[in-house]
Length: 316
Image (cartoon, rainbow, N blue to C red; front, side, top):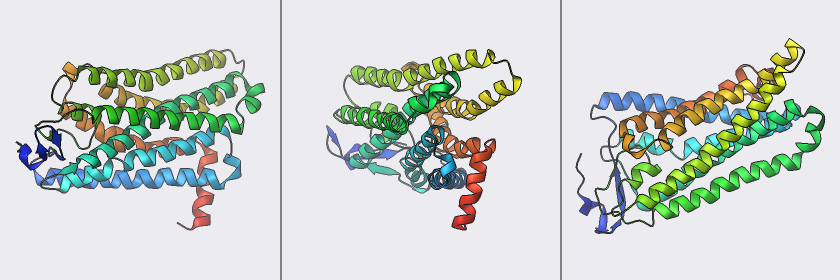
């Protein structure tokens, strides 16, 4: 679909508004996708809100592991809410678009919550490492203050990096075309619309991806490498099973989140595909967020019991 840039900008160097490419020209396909995304979005909001509320209202869950899980649920709510409403609007609109200011805001919050989640997942891996590999010192080293600092650093890194990246990208000139080949204002498709040499910006995006995606992932791998070595040295099969069961949910969430993020942001520009990125966007903004509460509650008796008490108390 061709877009006349005179409709979207004041002059050749300042775009006031961006258009979004339609996912499909067939209305039925858009409606079905709209219904699916809406149901998953509502399930994600409900599940993550219930997890956070259950942890907040049940003293038995006031431990470091569940403190981080509550933070993860709040991040997931912000992460999906920064993207999915715009995605739903675009699916049903005949001329989907967004203002420059709206696009800037959406990119900031998407990057903020996404980067914060990467850092928080690394903090959660460190917590599991301390619990399994250093159980005698766990209570003192993972104190309430230490947990709060780790969470604060995760949110702070996300905010700082997102602010810098968003400002850096939107300081560029956009001289057309003005159509974003995506559902929302993600970094790569917006950067593709900039005119002039964007090699430095692309390198900055890649370096941020290395720092905020690959580095926390490396910390997670190191933590779980030491956890595995410690578990294999346990004499009791029951002890090994119990130790690994406390890590399985986190490992599955890490795999889902980092798998899609790595494919999107760490692959070479030459292999960039808007169609693949759109499908991945649906997965990492909606599907994984919907699955996380299920993953953490399915095999966790304490969480299931807390959720049951919360539902009974609140009479949902």
